[in-house]
Image (cartoon, rainbow, N blue to C red):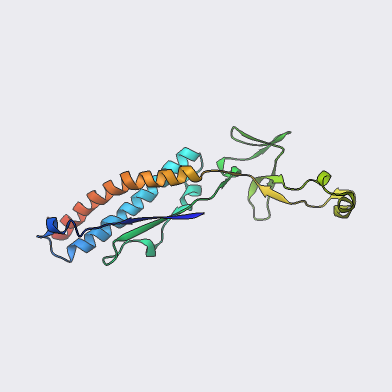
Length: 195
């Protein structure tokens, strides 16, 4: 699931307070301040999600992103941040360990599941979606090869984090994003006026 969060600045109402500032300076200052606020919001959201969920920041960072085309310009005062809100593999929370009765990551235990490396190099916690005992006898004989089981379908175990990521992003926009925008806007105007 992908969700976009958009920040838009409506400066027409503030125009009367900016009368003695040249017209060219305001769009440039808004653009610079809004883009800096976008960066600060993303940084803080990554930190919050990482500490709340318990994963490394690099694993949270790719889920909260923006590209150059999503930044504000002098003609379009809108900045966008995209949240890729999907479940996180259980192995992202730490090193998975195989136990006798299942798999374990940190203090989380997954009974009846197993740790396996994939061809891509990723080591995860998996569970079988179909068991041999659930299949009819004729099919069981077909999938057995020299007394060994051939591969049955598996599915990686994932953890739910959608609510935490979404809630933190909105809170950070209202707090970090707005504070950063106001500070940076004043700084950018003063810098361009060389005050």
